[in-house]
Image: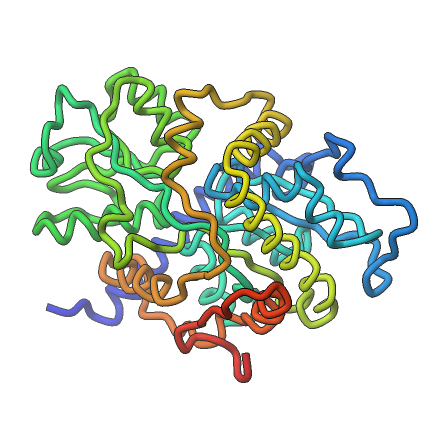
Amino acid sequence: MPASRSTRSTRSTLLRRGLAAVAALPLLTLAACGYGSEAKDTNKNEKVAAGAEKIDGLDTVKIGYFGNLTHATALVGREQGIFQKALGATKASYATFNAGPSEIEALNAGSIDIGWIGPSPAINGYTKSDGKSLRIIGGSASGGVKLVVNPDKVKSLKDVKGKKIATPQLGNTQDVAFLNWIADQGWKVDAQSGKGDVTVVRSDNKVTPDAFKAGSIDGAWVPEPTASKLVAEGGKVLLDESTLWPDQKFVITNIIVSQKFLTEHPKVVEAVLKGSVDTNKWINANPDEAKAAANKQLEADSGKALPTDVLDPAWKSIQFINDPLASTLSTEAEHAVKAGLLEKPDLKGIYDLSILNKVLKAAGETAVDDAGLGVSGS
């Protein structure tokens, strides 16, 4: 039976509170440096070249990303100085985030201008602002999400029933995907509490490997490199999410921009997108060097590099692409609605791919499609 309007409203309120609570954790921890950890210059590639000129006279563009390999376009583009080269004397400054809600807060507050982010936070940010806060201006990565389990407790997909499985946070991209998969099995779970035929445990990616090692969870539906960290602790990949999607492709990382910044500085946005396209081209042409560059930047940001037994399998499962795979964003939104985590959203206008397609044309590459969800004329 369809949920009543009051029930749907209550679910939406609970989701907002849940996301706000999750977002508050990193905000409290990082209060001294704003919404994310300020990432300092770490190598000579970040220096402005002699004789370079500012774009539109702008001193700085503020870029955000996560310390995940699914954000490797940002990691590699920064470490190799590709973004800074495209920006001339307009300095690229960076902030790292642990969760999507905190990055959306930073974008809304003007603490960052452009960010690499997952689809669910982008959808939430857009819908909560009535379509006024952000635009998705490009894609970055597909794949890199797996269900990893304790093979002693879970030997097949049907054995997931009755087990404790972690996701990164309530309503995040992997949480929505796992809840949708559970529903497809015919099992029941209360999305808010995570209780039901499967117990969904919302756990920060940083602590999930320890929880798995301690036996307090039986597995996790998580992005890389967390998935490969669990494998290194004795876990087994039971399901690669890419196998559930047409052509085994689904958006895991988008590029977003505040609408205000897009309106005021389109040439700077174009430069960042050129840097992203150039970075993905370099990654795909030089996978081993790119993998090392991403790991070097992760070490610079977090103080710890990934070991080879985690880095290598994680890297292989991610595709770095410019296409935002817009049709899969629509599907992911439908999954969130189905789970009771989101009112049916109006996503028309969430994309503006006009600048990206301009950059792709100049690079001799194929234009990408917004699946009918672009702004008028994009």
